[in-house]
Length: 341
Image (tube, rainbow, N blue to C red; front, side, top):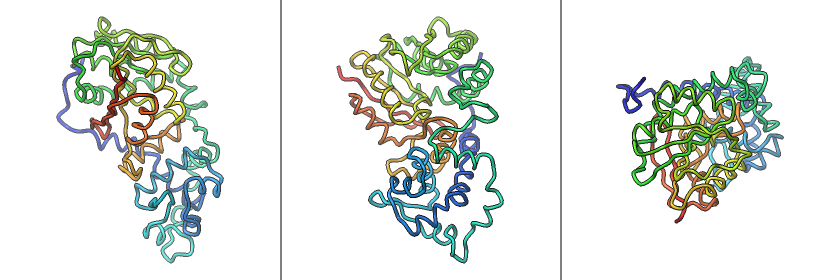
């Protein structure tokens, strides 16, 4: 099997960005052609809440849309009020001699653009690819769960060891990998920290997929699997490290808060929580590639990308202390925090 401590000679971040940003152009198309966002904002500089009311759209996808437009240099937020930039006013507002609306109009019926409009209106995720159900429901089927878990596994081979190297776990003993997919992160952690044991918590049918992947990597002595639903079951009190890797971005803020409170309850005193993800900056106007990735997450899941400041606030509200951000691979990073004790 592949050595989980080896690294490639090249950095694949630009390849990740092609995939992660694939729905972002459709968000601009939807904002311009379907919502006429920029002409509306030109007449009504507004808070996010007023934009939602004025355009009859919902909070989570509107947050994602405005974050993308800010990262693209089309809007800027001042004292919670969004204003157009000169670029947007010249090229995206009806009545301007340089208005580009007709240039985009012919593409208005692209399926993803129509999906995004529906998500903006309803707040509910669209279906993933050609699936007839949304991503969360599709993951309950063996075929889709196998395919999607393999996709996340191949990404994790590169990303996981950057997370494992970024924190000092010499004084910890057991990692709980919550919604850990194939177990690639757990396997990488025990490869880098041989004294660690790990438990992957996953719902069926992914738990069985994880068990097979862990066995194939020869990690069954150090990594086991527990079948549980992180949303509806208590987290097992077996660990002094909790890992959420590319998990919380699939859920809206109330669920993120719920899970972090569960971790606080289950962790032993002095335990660590590691939240590995793609993070926005505090102003939520970049980085552009993370704002683009957030569109993909908003389309197909109930979540979005969060800023480091938002995640640290959620952790603090759950009772954690000593928050810290550590950069990782492929424009990802890890927010760490500790349970007092």
